Amino acid sequence: MAKDNYSACLAFTLQAEGGLSRDRKDPGNWTGGKVGVGTFKGTKYGISAASFPHLDIANLTLDDVKPIYKTRYWDAVGGDSLPAGVDLAVWDYGVNSGPSRALREIQAIVGAKVDGRLGPETITRSATAGVKQIQMLCARRLSFMRSLKIWNINKNGWSARVAKVEAKGVAMFLTATGTSASARKVLASQGQRAGDKAATQAGQGALVGTGGTVTAATGLPSWLDFTLAMVGVALVTLAILALYRRNRQRADAYRAEAENLNDAA
Image (tube, rainbow, N blue to C red; front, side, top):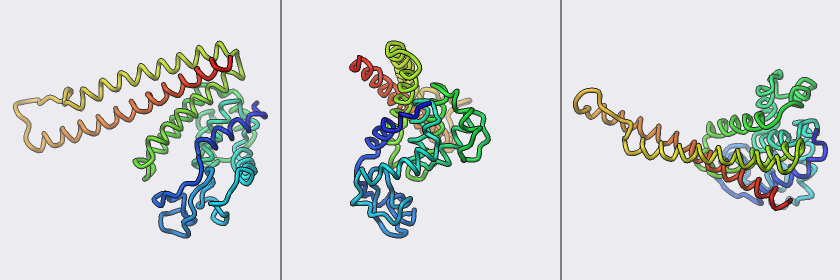
């Protein structure tokens, strides 16, 4: 288990969360949890007005937020009882979307009772989680993010963050359970696989976007047939491009982690 991994996970998440956010379109920046509801205070170091309405968000310091993260998020998801890397994936998800949701997701993956509560069964079943489970959790997290109303505003940043969580989590797991050399090999391989998928999806997107997969069954299509076909092409193209973006970001993240291990060697 990764009882000494909290500091590394916290450092990663704080870097991703950044400083003070004052986006008025973000519901998390309002004490009421909805745009225009309550007082607009913003978010700092990932501590949002919606989750902590009574805090003076703008004047928070790192020393202020560290104990909040420890008790409200790390301890809530059982970070000390999770394998290295799995802890990062569950913890960072919990910081973004709440510990209960993160726990429900990992419970579903490892086959524990899905209730969003930390218990002996969740801890026991999560103990054998590894690379596959980290990747599955990150995929499920991204799927949830896509369902949110503000996805289109934040999609690039969110998908890049999840890709980095996945790669960093896998790197943590591999280095905790093997050698740096073997970890670099796996990370490089994962980066190559994701890059190959992105290249394939880029080609598919270009083909569909030019109408290369659209054919008429008989004669010329009617204006309605043509319109529906074009809408279908647009939707398919957007779906393929979303997959391309995700895999390109995953490839970049895995390669960066492999390079980090090279630099540390």
